[in-house]
Amino acid sequence: HEAFAGQILSNIVAMGSQSFADDHFGGKKVGDIDISKMNTKGGSLAVGHPFGATGSRLVTTASRRLQDEGERFALIAACADGGLGHACILERYDN
Image (cartoon, rainbow, N blue to C red; front, side):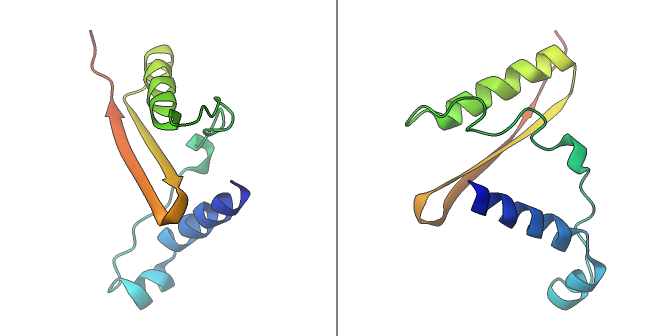
């Protein structure tokens, strides 16, 4: 998981770089990311990493945090062996 953290940090720097955008995306910069909002309670290892249930564990944890913290959106992402990965955005609706 440490290797993936390096990839994430590299991508965050690239997304906020105008020169990277100029070189690779025709000048359209993705934008800066507020790193203080990322993994504030840890990732899949921190919340428990049951074999075959990481995705449901991350979704459950994010859903509970949306309710507890009154936030509107959560972004969940995970990678898997062989270059696979998934991501989803959760939205909390007021009851």
